[in-house]
Image (cartoon, rainbow, N blue to C red; front, side, top):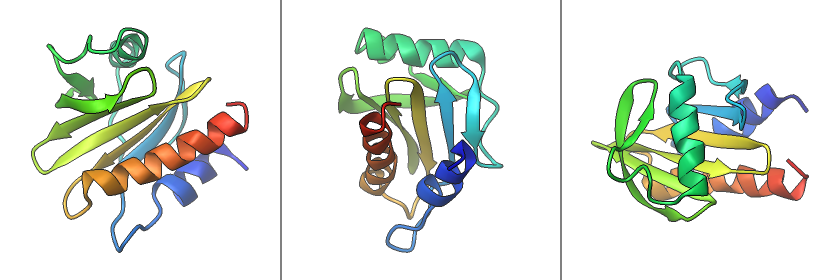
Length: 131
């Protein structure tokens, strides 16, 4: 299965009649493995800051999380495993695997919990597969 298929069929899937706004799988080196057509253009320094927060949990909290120049307020996550952010009625969930970041962006009517389920389920599966 291609990485694009994971984005198209697993991240952009429907859950309770809702979909993520955008999604991507990005290697820990910052390379884009696959993304939805409307995923923002992510800057290398944004990926670096996200990876640093996984290594030093809480480092993004004072400055916020940036994706494609959009700032998200960092909210609860799971240290070293999941970062969650909020912006208005939407937000972001980022799950770290051994080799990649699984990123899902959402807006209402999707809930944060629905986004978390989609992103974290795929992340857990990829971890189990050695990725």
